[in-house]
Length: 231
Image 1: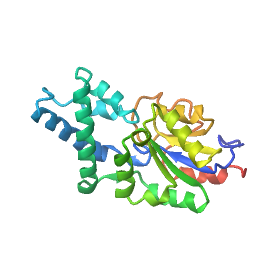
Image 2: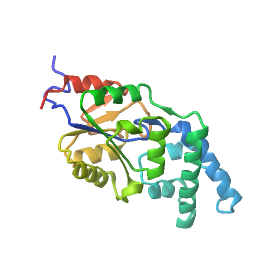
Image 3: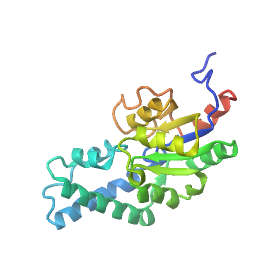
Image 4: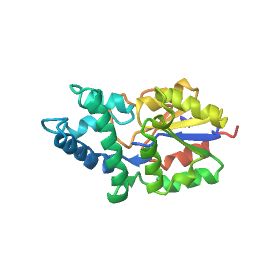
């Protein structure tokens, strides 16, 4: 029987999105989201009810300016920038205080891939201290050769961020692993195989259209790698 991975070549590297791929973001984002709007109301920058949680969750994977334009479209840049500051402050605090979670088998799978010689990277549209903070809080930071974020490198899109990563580390053959359309686009426009993570459940049904294969659990990456042909 022919499999979807027939003819695939083993990658030298795998590049992972953070939110909705490695990190179960809602375990941190939902309580922090409410804190941000409580504070904005206290400071007189926002009135009315906190927007629906589903609105912020649907924005995962987007750049922060785009997120706030969708979540609170009737407020200006000053409010959006203050929301940025509060979000980072409360997220970093929450990583130490709240019982946040990675998806099942993430550390174990990353370790298995590393033992097979796969170079591991993160490419996220989030802020630098947040992305690195998640990796540090969950003790997976040392498993990665590089952690790239739009916040650190000021890239305009994930396509640009992944290209920067590939060039900087001399990677020519990689799999892009993520749960959003921005991950699919970043992989395809950089000539990479795209593994779509269908277990997070964010976004609509077309979110992962164009992926080379969908996985329902993170540990499937090991068998996909093992079944791929040696370069």
